[in-house]
Image (cartoon, rainbow, N blue to C red; front, top):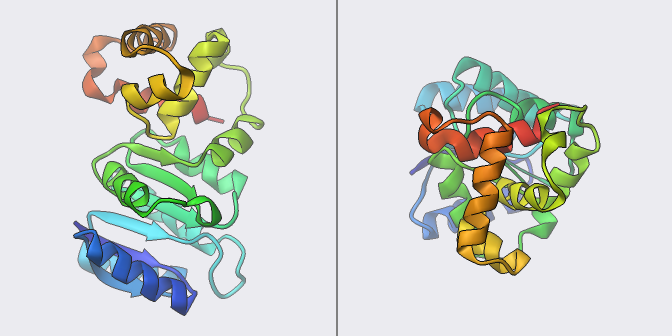
Length: 213
C-alpha cells in the first residue's frame, strides 16, 4: 500500500513513517503542510492519504480542508484524518460524502498499533474507521432524518459499524450473538432504504447516512 502522509510535527511524522513501514506500507512522500499534501497526491496517486488537521501556516484546519479538496478531485481516494481535535464542520463534510474510504481517528486515543494499522487498511479498501468521540460529536449536529426511525439498539449497532467493527466485534461489545447482530443490521438497511441491489456497499452507505449532516 502506497501512502502520502501529512504531519507537521517532525517527531510524529518520522515515527509514523517507521510504523507504517513496519506494517508493510510504503510512505511515498511525507509532507508538513497542506499545499505540499496536494502536490504529493497529484504526483504519486497514492492508495491512501493520512493527514493531520492543524498544519501551517495558521494551524487551524488546513489539513482537513486539503482532504476535502482531494476528495472533490477524486471521490474514491481513501483519506484518514489523524488528529488531536475534532473539527466538526469540515469533518462532517468529509464523512458525509457519497463514497466510503474515510476515517477520522484521534491521536491520543490510539492505544493499539495493530488496530491502528488495520484501520488504515480498512479505509484504503473502501471502509470506515471512526473514533467513538468523533461519532458522538458529529451526531450532536445531525438534523432529523431516516436515522430517527432506528431503535436504540439499532443505533448502537450502527455506531459500532461506524467505528469499523465486524459483526463479531459488534456482538462482543453489545453482548449479542452474531445472528442477532445480523438481524439488527438487516433492519437498519431496511429502515434506511438500502436494498440488496446496493451490494456490499450497504454497510458503508449506512454509516455515511448515520453521519450525514
